[in-house]
Length: 344
Image (cartoon, rainbow, N blue to C red; front, side):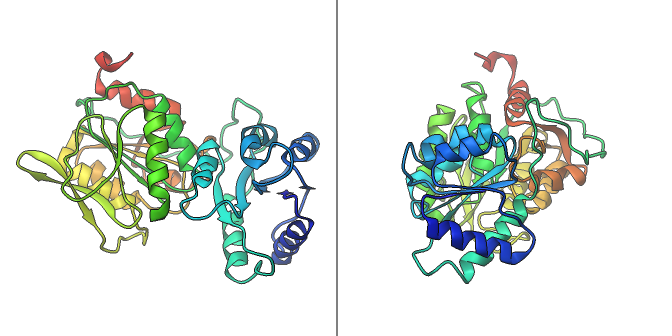
């Protein structure tokens, strides 16, 4: 489904998508309100949504569109979705699976077309579910690992496509005090990071900083990997201190979950807990393997609540997960490791 007030944009996007042969345009709308009305009688897998339109606009109506979409994923395709634009991170936080800057007139071709088709394929078919979510058609049969009862020493969270919304839900459901440092690696380019950190701090109701070399990892403070470096820790003077690493990772991602999870496992052992949220690909599996080998535990987001069940599925299928849960229940499991005294 294409939602854009420009007839030219709708026509060009439709032609571009249908030329690929793997997709069908099921509906089109010129406003968010028209899209919600159409979704009452048509089912789609992915919605391409502009933000600047007549009426309330795409951003304000995004939660209502997602509610009406019955499981369909939303990709924001808008001139507003520029690198570092606050509206981009806001859309991701509200539940958009991905964003793409809309090219200027006459530039809907070349690399933009390739990236759009790649993102559409990654999101795949929607489950078209009505809450409560149905079980996956292909459930993971690998047994879950036992989780250590050791007090929580560090929480390391990784996410990619669809992960910002999941992060918000997780942080909103964590108790105010965990008593442990919190590390976050989210696949985002550097210009987004300041806005992302502010959004996470608001959701978590605690400090959130872009990590820099030499920072001490303090209990209940969130340290976020910058967009151009892996976040790792080393011990200095008895304290865990940030060391940024820009070497190529096995997954090819920068930042990558792998160095963060490896570092957390090697430093904290059984007291380390890693969380893998929504995202495409396999980033995090190598680091999760190391963290588990050191005695730590991995919790993966479940398929029903993930925009893209790639990274969580990879660790689950590898037999590394101690639990596979939606973000709110992940928060409860993490809190149980922090001790009952930390519950409000």
